[in-house]
Image 1 (cartoon, rainbow, N blue to C red):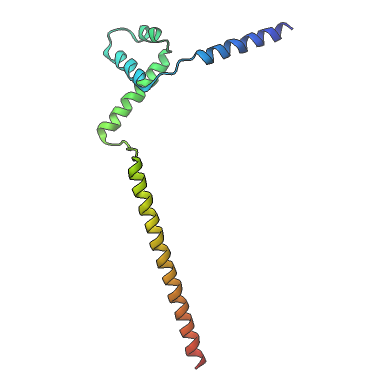
Image 2 (image 1 turned 180 degrees about the vertical axis):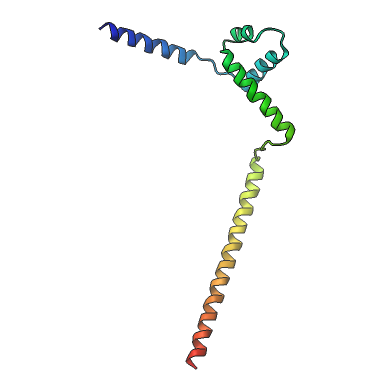
Length: 123
């Protein structure tokens, strides 16, 4: 019975921690990383104040710096706007129609060539 209470209390504690875990917006993450990079206070104190583990801070700062490096190098992939997506879909549909027409013409020509070959054999 004692192990039941222990596992039950552990699951309750885990559930409370999960529910109280704070979700940070991108702006908050950037703010925290920039404060750490300024060096006005130690990373440990900053993390304690913000309620995050130092490992999370270092991971976020690494991601932040790598993203900046990619942006400077021009290696970033820009997301398409909805109007660009619509234009590309329309162009794709148009190209599919053109391919279908070419395939159909090709089949008709092959068929007519086959028919003319059979006609020349019969005569």
